[in-house]
Length: 198
Image 1 (cartoon, rainbow, N blue to C red):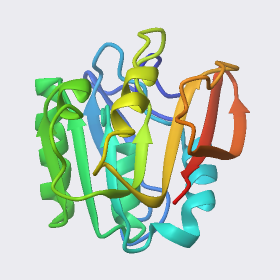
Image 2: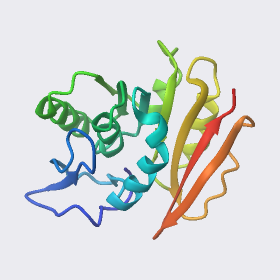
Image 3: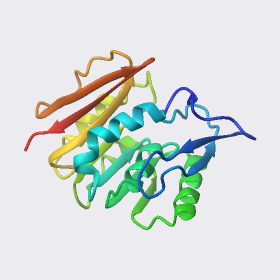
């Protein structure tokens, strides 16, 4: 969600479209604003990611930081996540996310209009099973997010953390008890799935 338009989204009157790949809303298309810096995770990458997450996404409590178009959070809801918190600091984007949830009649999601780093300074009500981390590229946001997620209460034991980065960016920011269990690249993007050891 953060630095190039998706190859899969076609502009229309200042908007792009997002396709939900699978689950209860499979095939539904949602529009989102053509906002500068908004880079939805591509269909190809999302399909691979959710294949990785298939054994644990049903019933999972998820956090989608830098939610943008909502591609990851809404896909998680469609595939059976029990609750998704989506965080973004762009007013237009947040308004569109509310519209998406209303269109889908989604009851198990919360949208927070906030800076991701500021949000992570708060105390979570409960921990998360899955966290999606796809910050804008070249902004040095991944490391401080990872550092804040290490604080007590954010991640449940065995939590999975998805990281989407510029291609071949070293993952030196990972906490000592996070292990990368999957990694792939597509075009100029590298994406990884890590697990928090108990």
